[in-house]
Image (cartoon, rainbow, N blue to C red):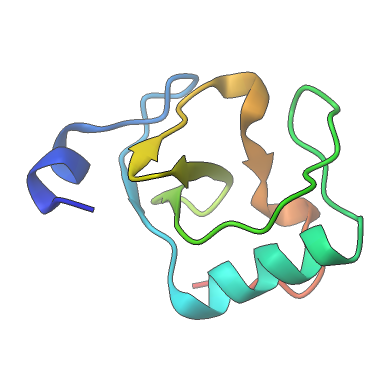
Length: 89
């Protein structure tokens, strides 16, 4: 993702700054998706693995990126603390 774009994006719910998911974080998210354990804030099951994602700098909220476009919809976000084994930085 373009750093200039990332510098201006923020969480729509809290206005916290965002950063790209690290490789270990992305792996944890995709493990949870593959295990059928992950639901978004709207209660929907997350069904497909993600290739890229953003997380608030406080490490609480994850947003998927689809085809290079951040999906910054609060009810489509995932709570990072709900993911078993999610790396805490």
